[in-house]
Length: 271
Image 1 (tube, rainbow, N blue to C red):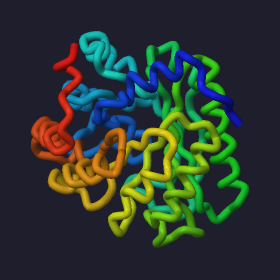
Image 2 (cartoon, rainbow, N blue to C red; image 1 turned 180 degrees about the vertical axis):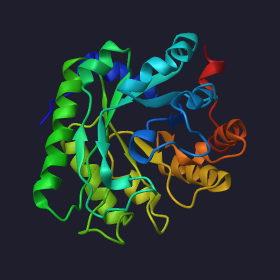
Image 3 (cartoon, rainbow, N blue to C red; image 1 turned 90 degrees about the horizontal axis):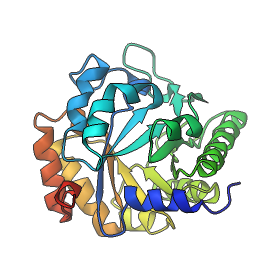
């Protein structure tokens, strides 16, 4: 297990998820899991989403050079690097799976060398094979340790998936279990789905670390704004959206609506 994060990791987490601000992140790493998102086809077509009035962007390690010009031009934009791949969300061209497997594809050391402010790693729970579930936990714990060793905070994504949890993926009690597992592994923050039944306060209130809400069905601009508003009321530190932005006809307007709903200014206004 990881000990307390280093001073550099703690400072970077505060920059990424400031205590007074509600952070808005765009998850442009989603192509690694599901293929080109929304109406995009090429990786470089996602660069326009980095120019939205968001606070941070999630990328794979290999995608960072594609966004380097934007990252240099926007020093206010925090960079989170996704470390792993998972077959759980294979694209529609392939048969879906209930018990996906994952591998770690890059390291916190590589992320730090590319200028990342944090790293992100899955921790899937509920797999039908206990050995695979244990592998997710082991790799998540290793990601935290290695991130802290190079001064980076590690966000864990404890998602409930697998044949042991079919139909219960967004059950509040399961989400609380996932958050606690991630926290015990040393996560500096967690990215979770919105619980079914509207028990955001019970789920987010169970976390001792900042919580980011993920894109969660139903997906529409109105639902994205409502999810953010209910999240901030429950104590969430921000949103880390993918499909909400990539399927929106007017993503810039969606970001503005989210900020208005949670009453937080753009960090561009602070710089």
